[in-house]
Length: 114
Image (tube, rainbow, N blue to C red; front, side, top):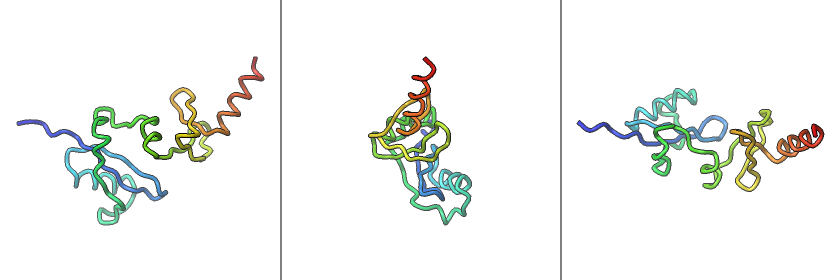
């Protein structure tokens, strides 16, 4: 018997963002998302199949650059400042997505260190 391939699904979370999950069955994915979001199964908002992300099933992580190029926004990870980061304001610092303000502060600190 052939193993079922994991597919990507999404749902809106309580903060207006989107949660992604990879699962072999749609209803199981919805149950998992309900648990992650903290709501009942019937209250999962905007549950969708996301075939554009199926190829990331092995790592269960879509690269930040891919999400940003598709118009998604991410939250700055530098110091948890909660600023939104869009493709046009994207800066990478190691494996972190950071906003313009945090990037400027990092660069200022590097200039002062030298």
